[in-house]
Length: 278
Image (cartoon, rainbow, N blue to C red; front, side, top):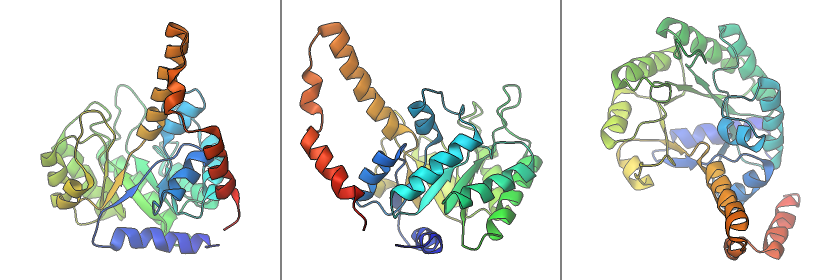
């Protein structure tokens, strides 16, 4: 089985190839194993999807629980795992650095740090503080015994401040601070994505799976995107199917949803196969 160093090199190489790849987001070991079975080259956690699995809203899971989740997913497959580390679980650069170190110890070979403060009155960190936090994350990543791929996120569009120019200034500053991948979730047009890839020289991640966004992989590739993730959308798709089925049972007293469900023998056979040592 590949070592963590091997996985880190494989993940790094995906970003260095002259192509665009998809890194989907499982929310538990079962979904991780199914995605690995389908042939994806790497996985990334979803803070939202994991929170939903615990009956919580996005952002309500603390660092200890998230790290336990990372350990579970890192052991579930042989694929490289990148981690949604939210804002590093603290304001101080030292806390962000510690979070990077702990994520690596839990089995991650990459991770993302947001520039959101969690404060309603000022949801984005001032740029100087945000840069200090990314610098601390970069320094912590470089001290690891393998190449940890650090993603820096500009959260303008998710935090209710959809200022593209400010998001680009932030991403350029994070790039200068040493981030390996740049990411501004919430972009919804070709023009916004093209502006981001045109303003940056390092790999850009774009998230798909939001309502109203209909660009496909070929279109994203043509725009210069290097990596595509789907955030909590797979978890939301699963929960959406669950709620439709439960509402059918409650409101109609019928069970037609079962026609769309994977047969029990098939999913049991698949998980028995996936549970075998490689």
